[in-house]
Length: 538
Image 1: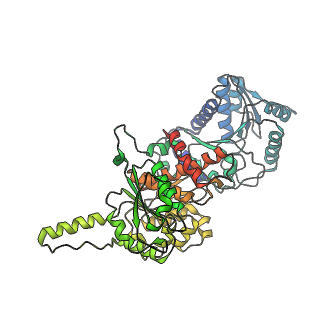
Image 2: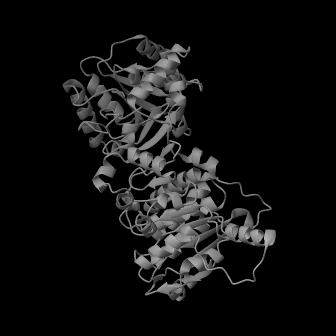
Image 3: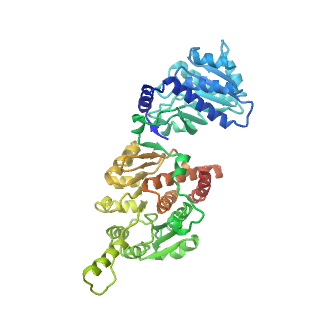
């Protein structure tokens, strides 16, 4: 799903019109798509009753086209006109048996109809409105809200393109805006819908096709996507019947310290849940007894330690065990001691002490050196949590990472990497993620509400989820494990980051739904929900 500003959407429609897809045809396509969505929602209901709030603009037209299509299919369809004249679309609706509430008691007719309606289409205001709302429209929306609040059982509220009263660029919301259960947006997601407070009014979000030509330059130039089920499903590797564990790669996770043993298990199990064939956990030897029994499927690389954290000399041990790894995660639970920073610095420099060998000459010597260098080269890398804070202390760290590494900072860690304040980062998360992905040459996963994944080549994906279910210690370790697990299976860096972040967000929502509250969700609940998300993607 593409993400657009209001002006970008207007430019797309203008170009489409100039190339033969008229505005009227776009409206017909949008309305029919909306009708199809409604029909699918109530596919088992042969006596569907639907009411539309129809405004004067294009989304009022979309609503009328949808109501007309539904009436033609035998649905009981009615419309309440808000500042809309009885134009051709209204006439077409009436001609197929649609009902227009009219007369002095039109609002009373609407109120009576809502008591039995299955769905309410909100097509009063479109994407181009600016706040505050005009008095008459604001009063109408407020009165409809009062009606809905008074009902024992409200109809399903479906917003047409956007909930009426939402600024689709800024995400600001009028007080009178009707909360939608579902927003059916046309052609692309408007950026304001993925901002707070607007997102609280959107409900589930679905995009319908309006028939835009694929060769539109204004459409091709858009580089920001919104992740959804279909796009993520297409990224996941196939799992052939003749597969073996080597088919799905090896994720090597360097993590943990005496104070943060749980991070190791969360990240390691998440990598397995993502489908990785083998997970190796490289940890300080001192915590092995505490964590080994919690993940019996893992293999272990025991690293030298100092006071319970990975020591600087551990790079040598890790490099000797890195050959089979197809992706490497550094960071969860490491702590921020200087010895561990030196470990990362040595690892990035490929520093290890080679075994003593007899002198050799000519190509034999060169061949051995080449093999040693190949052995010590780092696999695709993901850096998370304390690993990011330690990375920030290493000069020119961005040039020392493997190409297209994945960095997964929350705003505090992004602040450590960039020198910007958290407030500056949060003010325009997408722009900040894009800027530094480009400057650093790595994929940035800026975590938080509406996680942003930015690639150095300018591509950006937004995860359309904002939930306190994920505001809990350890959920970041689960995310890092998911991403390295997908990377280990051969997904490229950007795709692994997008898929991992979307699956992680959905797992948080699933966990909250299972528990009945976001307050009780723990990282282990998110971890346990990964398999349910993946099952629904198949």
